[in-house]
Image (cartoon, rainbow, N blue to C red; front, top):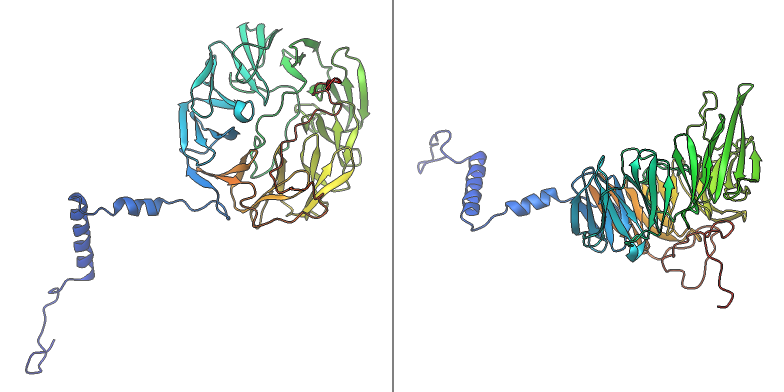
Length: 488
């Protein structure tokens, strides 16, 4: 600094306000203003800092952060039911806002559409409650059941007076009186929760697609209850116990497609030799037989069968002696699909199979029993897939994608750039999630404009821009549906 005479005037250090001092003064001013109610920027700043990043591109219809990582997510009518470790909550399908919350150790959805309800309970405690998915109001309460099984059109529960004296009851999802009851000499209930294991098929699984993404299935015509090493076959239409069968030493039993399957794995010459027999549910007589198909029920140690076969609904998935994958009709034993060498089935139901090409560069939909490829689209070698009543889901990596497709035509319903998982699929969209963030994607709104038909796809009927309707099966021999009235 210079004086009037031009000479430099010394200035003592620290005589002015430095940057730190100005920042401190500004902070004190803001605190005073906030404390006096004049101006408080802190809530806005916190909201900005805590704002979640969109979990997909294009953006979802809504995105919410929930209290913990969900164990399961199911679309129930106009609600999204979220099961967590110690509670269950429901959110609006339209806006994502919370509708209700309950403490519960387990939950499951039964019924479909507006008839859906939520079943909740506690581990190691008898009984359950049936809740309205929109309001959370208890519609029915049971204090004695030790296990429940949930389906699109039926709720089953079991109550036991003694360990060897149990009653199985069937309920309409919103009913208050049992449709039928049956007596069983016990049930295998695990931890007294929902959907204990029955002797049927197990679903193929895929990375980034939840195993329950399809929601509850329609109840099969027959169910196999394992009790003390035996299998009790129950007719789900009447409640009659049709068979009480003990498997042989080299056998595993499964009830699939209205048949009791006896799967034999015999060890000889260092290899496993397989045979499958489908038995009539009423007479026990053999209806069909296949030899040589490996249903992946046995491990490598002595051909001991510890797993259910892979499959869904009325079909099972196996491997032929030459290493090709096959889809087998559980009702009549027909081979509905035989893949080419090195092709792999990623997902299957009793309508279609999603198959990865031998070179890993594409996924195609095969119509079972017709030998026809419905559609084909490029995909990475690590792509996974799932089939639901409303959409086929393909999850790809590098780059990360989730794609929802019309199962019949391959038309794109939603194409998302995201690393999130597919959690639940409903009639008009799907729920995706990553960690504690979940969001809803509406079909048709995130497909990137007007989607073209996939390669080789059937263009479908006029007006195919509509969301596809669910395609529940009547079974390979129409055994799940009532015969039409000839007078109508």
